[in-house]
Length: 490
Image 1 (cartoon, rainbow, N blue to C red):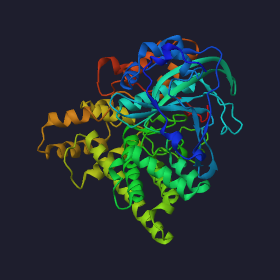
Image 2 (image 1 turned 120 degrees about the vertical axis):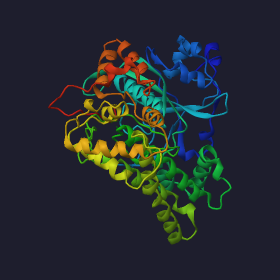
Image 3 (image 1 turned 180 degrees about the horizontal axis):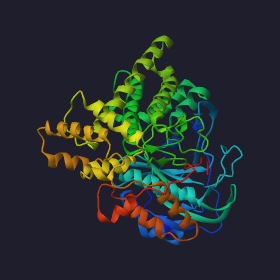
Image 4 (image 1 turned 90 degrees about the vertical axis):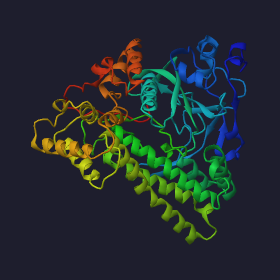
C-alpha cells in the first residue's frame, strides 16, 4: 500500500514494540480494504492529545487509514494472540477482527495502541467475518467516551468510519470500523496464552515487556513478577470500584476482557443501571447472572486468580512456594476493592472523614433503593441538591429515619457543608449514557442522522456539570414489560 503525502503529514509517530516480542504472540497481518469508507465521527480532542493533525486525518486520505485501506508511516500491522476464560471455559482466542497498527508516541512521550476494530478476518477469526456493524461501533464510541468523562480508566475511541459494505447478522447491517486507543491491549488472557502454549522464556519476555511498559517503578524490586501481580490487583480493585459507583455493568468480564493496564475494554453488552438492583444483567447470553452488577467484584477477583496462575512459573522456583505467594497476594484484592468502594460511597454522600458506622449507613440506603426500585444515579443526584422529594424513597418512614442519620453524620464533620456539597457534586454525575438515550442515538445514526448522537456526546462530555441543558437527559425510560438486553460479538 502506497502512502500519500497527507498520511505522512498527519502526525503519525508510530513504534511497534509489541512486534518485538516473540513471534508466537502475534501474526503480522494487514487490514482488509473496504469499498467506500466515509468518516462518521472523529474525536478532535483525543487526536490533538495524541499529537495527530486533525484536518489531515479527516481528509479523504486520512480516512483511508481508519478504513484500513492505507497503512500509516511506521506501522507494522499485526493481530494479537491470546486466550481466555469465557464464562468460565478456557479457550484459544486472538484478534479475530482487529488489527494493531502500532503505538503512537505522543509529544509528551506517552505510548498508546492504535487498533482498528472490524478491519477484516485474521488468522484468529475462528469462522467470523472479521467485520463490525455501525451501531455497535458507535455504541463503543459513546460509552467509552462517557466512561472517560466520568474519570474511569478506559480504552477510547478516535474515529468511526462506515465501510460502504454490508455485514450480515440477524439482518443486513451497515458495516463500520472503529479506531480504538488504549494504553495497551495486554490482557489476563495474553498471559494465560503464554502460560499454556508458550515457553517459560516467552512468558518471562511478556512479563518483562509489561513491567517496562506499564509498571517501570517495580523493575528493581526483589520479586518483580510478584510485584507485577500486586500492581495489577491494585489497579483492578480501583477500576471495579469505579464501575460500581456509577452503576456500570460490563456484561462480559471474561479474562480476555481484563486488561493488565487497568483499563475498561470491550463495550459489547455493557450498559448502565437505572433502577438499583444488585442482580441486574443486560447481556443476552448471561442467563445465569455470572457477570451481574453485584458479582463484578467477585469475578474480577476470579480473573486475577487466573492471572496469578499464569505467573506461577515466574514467582518462585519451588511450585508450592509460588502457589503460596500467589494465594497470599490475591487475598489482598477484596480489602483493596472494599476500601476504594467505601471511599467512593462516602464521597457520594458528602462524607469526608471516616467513622465505623459509615458502612451500615451506606448499605441501608442501598437496601432501601433496591426495595423501592429507586433510580441509582438520580437518587444520589437528589441527595446532592437536597431535593429529597425527587427520589423514589420519598414519603417512606425508613427514608425519613435514614435522612436524619445522614444529616447527623454530616454535622459531626469538621468540614463545612459547602465542602460536602462540592464533594457530592464531583462524585455524583448528573448524566450517564442512559440505555434509552443510547438506543435513540444509534437508531437515528443508522438512518443517517448523526445529530442525536452528537448532542448526546456533548451532554455526556461533562457529567458533573449539573447544567440545565443536562436535565432532559436525567429522565428514565418509560416502563416496559421487556427487560433491556444487549448483545456480544456484534
